[in-house]
Length: 115
Length: 113
Image (cartoon, rainbow over all chains, first blue to last red; front, side, top):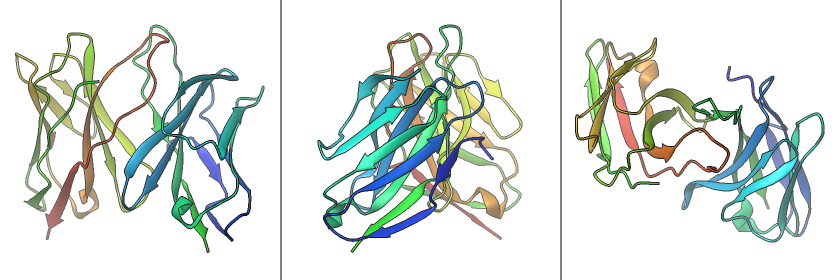
């Protein structure tokens, strides 16, 4: 158990819909990362937040957005869903302190199926 | 982050040591070598990381060559539960200016009874 929690575990929805994935980082970790894993693209970095602010952006679609709240949990919002958005979505957290080696610890993931 | 090259797949007998190689010939002086594994669609699991010295923890050992252009992850006594995809990642660590982990295709390790 990494200490990172993600809800829900599974999500089945239809094209055009909007969903929200939730992530709670490990206690004390200030940074949250979102990754997408699809069969054809592998594990890809989407976005990073640090203490409530966006820190880095990867290959995140404009239909996707994220935020990190004052209690440090994060939500990934996916809208206008397409079949190709079906994937595993992982959240990771790290301390992101200047003196740390900042290892990222991953949650169990949310499996999104778009029908 | 420097690019890494790993074999696509490897086999290992249960109870034997599994040695997973990784080539990172373009690694920079401030880049660490990280290893993660992913067991069947679970979240990637952190294994170990190192800069230039060999490292050991309860899961594995990491051997980094003196020129730092390659490394080997060693699982000393592989079990069936070690069957997974193993990812070697090179990245800058620490500070406030880094971000993502860049996952390649990894090595599929299959441990046989």
